[in-house]
Image (cartoon, rainbow, N blue to C red; front, side):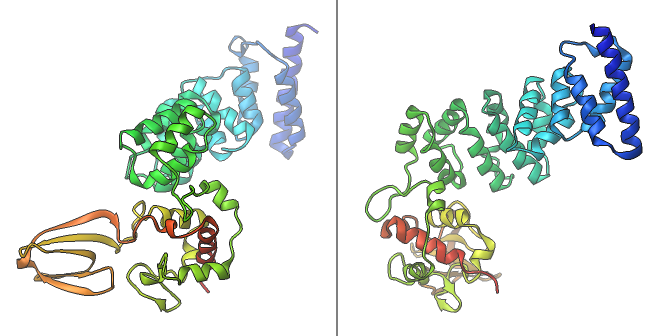
Length: 373
């Protein structure tokens, strides 16, 4: 059968399928039409208005599916960026979702991708970053990099950007260069350390071990990566014992069901608020995410002394500060030379150095078990 006959048969099948679809939603007939179209390799539909119209009708029927991507790619359709992005962001870990993003990148659809990344829809932005990484293409890197240090964007989105960047060697290298120049945001360093220390490129991995070393545990050995920690099995009972022992001394700043000292947040329901990965990061990198109301302040007094701790009240005449022992002191404003809000948490870093890796994961398991009743 020559090409013209194939075109004629395809047009008939397409038209019939669409009529049936409109009447009874017979997806099997649509599949037959799509299969027929897939056989028209190298055909320029712009030279045949009827075929072009049939293709676009089928495209509408197939929107959001693997077949949609197949048709756009096969006929090199230039006006389907929105549909491709929809498929990609809805299916970031599926083969056809990743392929949709690759097609979009090849069609220079960076404007559409950039708008999705910069948009107010957090889910779409995060999934777009994820699928960009899954393409493992260099073209994704310049689209992702601007989000890294944008403190106006959601932290989980920016963490996803880190995970996306390390899917390519140049993305991982760019991330490492930012860390080397101390230009990587503090709230991303733990995530970046875990990801960069597990990449497959030896030169990047070796450099990451120097610039962003994994936190060391009690035996001076680096803790496993986040992914490995999450695979470890913890014991809730042993973890409770770790929480209430002098080192790491969690109870000296936190309460659990009325036990402990209330300086930092009450952790009685922490497992309902944070996943295990977030709990791990909160312990290892307390400066990465400081809870509202628990920001630390430093006061410089006229006497030459300093006050450091949590701001508990700020009236017209005085400021009250709670120190690391839970003691609240009040300072008349006329005695205060300067007040600074710090970027460091009142919770100390390096707590993992008083624990073995198993102690650490037991503690995480205990904290994660603390759920709202």
